[in-house]
Structure formats: structure tokens, C-alpha cells
Amino acid sequence: MTHDPSAPTSELPASPASLEAQLQALEARVLHLQAAVSQAQALFQDSPGPAFLLTPQGRLLDVNARGTALLGSSAPLLLGRSFTLFLASSSQAAFAALLGRVFEGRGPQTGEIQLLTPGGEVLDLTLHAALHQPPGEAPYCQVILMDVTAFKLAHRVLLDTQQVQERQIEAQAVRLRALGEEFEGVMLTSGRALDDTLTRGESYLTLLHQHPQTPGHLGHAEEALRQTRGLLGSLRQYMQLRFLRARLRSVDLGRVLREVLKDVQEEMAGRDVQVTSAPLPTVYGDSQVLQIILHEYVSNALKFTRTRAHTRLRVLVQEDTAEYRIGVEDNGVGFHQRQKDRTFELFGKLHSSSVYEGTGLGLAVVRRLCERFGGRAWGEGKVDQGATFWFAWPKAPTEK
Image (cartoon, rainbow, N blue to C red):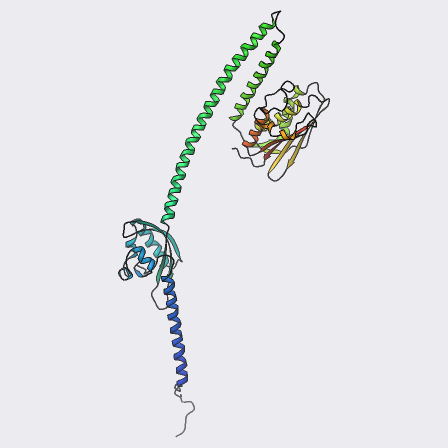
């Protein structure tokens, strides 16, 4: 009988050594899987928060020790029960929707729920839910909870406190507005009464001057009345500026300076006055406010250069990314640098009223106007060497 080479040959059985190697590889794989399962189980049980494994219907497949403590029961009694039974009614629909998104494969989900404890306490919890689908097994969802009840309580207390403070601030604002209106009314009424008194005093002195035996020292009384009337006028201006309604828009400071120089022509009459200026910028601000500031600075410079044979005023400009700095430099009597802050105080006069008239309110008004729009005002000087008064105006002013 001859052998046909084309006929199929039967497969040779595996050798015992080969079977032994395959068996060892299978056992190693089983051991690896068991170790992985044990590790996953340990991580689940040792989770820092309550952890649960849920079916797509929301039933409990497993629960760790913190989860059983939270629900107040044991694992054998909890398994198979619906997790939504432990939730407040307001959280059940939201949780069911979140669980549906997890099993639809839309990625891990986070949310907030309220849980009812066996003692009837309502706990605020945040949750993180993620889908797990082991090969050859049904998918399940792992839910990890974190108790934020204390945080929520603190947040509610903070909100309540904030609301109380806001109501108190509103009440204080109303009270301050009322006090401001009352103060304004008192000032206006007092101003009118004082104005009437000054008018009577001036009329009386006029009549006395017509008498041939009028004492010469009544001139001091006339000067006192004149100064009092000047103070009254300054107080009225100060009150008007306190309640000034500003309109922010583009303002050409060069044009403002020209208007100011027209206003002070009387103060410059009969004097050798030279005014020079660097090119002035266009700023964003209130034209009336800026005119008041420049007018006060120029008028102040003219006042304290009156004793000079030749008066020299120079308007300076500096600029950086945040603000413009405008200065009015003079060659007048100056002041000691240690007194620079006093010049901007209410009634903060540095020189005798008998030599330089004024009430000491002008520069205080300038500082308050600048600060109202986020700016600054200050002065630099040396005795008998002149002074420079500056104001810084922000490029993006905000009214306070």
C-alpha cells in the first residue's frame, strides 16, 4: 500500500510540556485578574466618601462601609434596593436623569442631591458618577458622595449675613442722603440769614460814614464784613460743588485754559504777567470741574505773585499710561514744603489774610473734585522761590 502525499495528515497531539506551560499561563492570568479585582474592591471600600455601585435601574449592587453608615443599614439589607428611596423627593427626578446620562455613555456626571437619613435629617451632598463596563459583564455605575451640608449651611448663613448688611448699608445710605439734604438746607437757610445780617451791618456802616464824627477804626469793621461776605460766597460755592452733577465727555484742556485766562483778566490788569503753556491734551472728564480746577490754580498763582515786578506762570504737562499730570508753576512767594498738605485742607491758609485775601477753601475744593473722579492734587514749593500746583487726572475717570 503506497502513501498519498496529498492526503491530509492528522494534527499531532501537544506534548505534556506544552500543556503544562499553557496551564501555568492561564493560572497566572487568573491570579492577575483576581488581584486586580481585589485591588478594585479595596479601593472601593477604602474610598474617602460613601461609594455605591448601581444598576441602570438605580438598584444597589454594592456599597462601602461609609455608604452603609450614611444610609444607616448593613450591606446585605441594602443590596438590591433602589437608591432613590433614600433621596429627598426634590432630588429623585434629577438623580434619575443624571444616571440615565451615565448609562447613555455621555461621560462622568456630577451633581448635587439631598439625602434623608434614618433620623429624618436632610443632608446636602455632591456626587460624582462614572460608568464601568467590565468585559463580558453587565455595566454598572459607581457613585461617590461628599457631604457638603456644613458648607451649604455656612453659605446660607453668609448669604443671610450679606443680605442683612446690604439692608443696613441701604438704610445708612438713605440716612446719609437725608442728613446731606438736611445739611444743605441748614447751610442755605443759614447763608440767607447771614447774608441779611451782613447787608444790615454794611448799611449801618454806610450811614455812619455820612456822619462827620465817624471813628476811623470802623474801617476794621468794614474789612471784617468784607471778609465774612467772601467766606459766605466760598461756602456757597463749596456747597454747590458738593452736589454738582458731572457729565463725562471729551474736554480740550487748551480751550479750558483759554476760558480761564479770559476770566482772570481783571486780576492781571495793570501787571506784567506772562503765561506760557505746553500743548494741553484732550481728556475725558467734566468741563465744568476741570475749569474750576484750572481757574483755582491760575487765580492762586496770580494772587501769590502780586508782589513780583514780573509775573511768570507756566502750565506743565506730564503723562504716563494711566493719567495726565497738569501743573501750574509760578514765581511767587512759595511756601515751605513741610506745609504742602495744609494748603489743601479746609481753611488751610499759609499766609496772612491781611496780605493775601481768600478763605482757604479753593484748594480744598480742588482736591475733593480730583478725588471724586479718581485723581489727585498736590503742591510743591520753596519759600520765596515760587510754587507749582499739580493735579493728576486719570485717563479713565470713574465718578465716586
